[in-house]
Length: 109
Image (cartoon, rainbow, N blue to C red; front, side, top):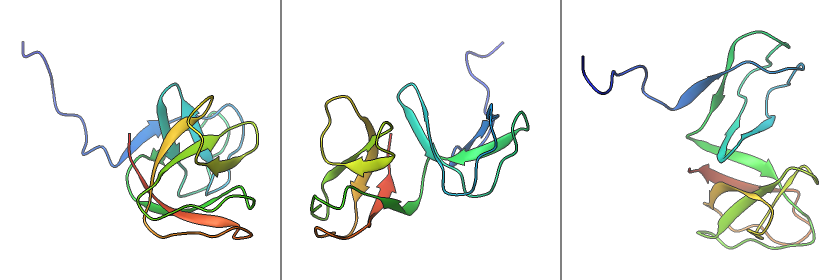
């Protein structure tokens, strides 16, 4: 038997939520962060994207430079540039100024 067997490409991974999740929900599983592209019903197998580019809610009090690391603050439900206590979401692909509600992020793990 081989040590590994190919399962899927990996742009999205299987996920079964405990509660209904609308499309665009950020999901944190340990160090893995993904985003739902479609609604997923509670206790029904769906998928979260772990690759791709998404417009993600951000703290409107901060500005983000293109190329900066972006983290998910699960408590506040928004992206930030502070690593401490937050999970890496990816890197900004466009700059986003203060009072801007979203930042465009390329997901990376």
